[in-house]
Length: 276
Image (cartoon, rainbow, N blue to C red; front, side, top):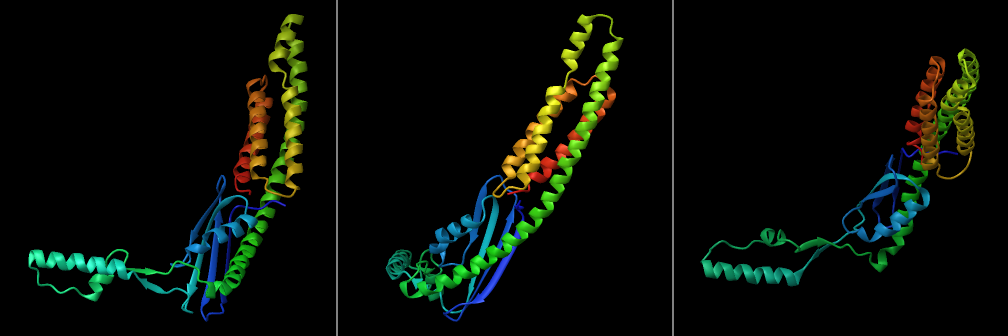
């Protein structure tokens, strides 16, 4: 079944250390898989793990994941004492050399770059919380998958309808082409003129290729796995054959059918770009 690249999922849960965890995931159209993570300070060590989990569930699209941790004391402030001492020594030296009288306050020192940070490690005694965080993330991903699958089913119905509509138009195009060739050939005086006319106006090959592409397109809608790129490629081939048929048109009715085909293909390509 097709999956849309657009979806949303979230999950909240309590965790062992007494805090709460929530994961929010949004996905949108993208040519490839792009993962953007927003993690709390102190949890950057989880980035690779989270990306691997997402990559196991999503194959294409721009995925924005926001992980929030509240309470529980899972992140601790850290003061870089050695750096603070260097700052202090340098500032006192400036005070003496410039004869400044301003006192150095704690708030001034803490605000200096690199003095106060949040622990970004994943300490051994907190590894027990990862399975719980992983469960929250997977719950949000499951909801995301459901919304993508639901929208994908709607896209599948729409694409199949458009492709089947193309089949009907192709039948009319083929019949109209044969009629036009007979009528216009009969009006020509010599075999050479008729041969030249048929050579420049014959769209039999384009019609047969379009039939094949439509059949292949409909068949691909029912298969498992990511299909967006393949469907878009097939639609491009449909467009190419239709343009060629339009360039060879020898009749206003044929031109009208070609325009109808182009309209269907444009709708198909627009929607195929939403498919994973």
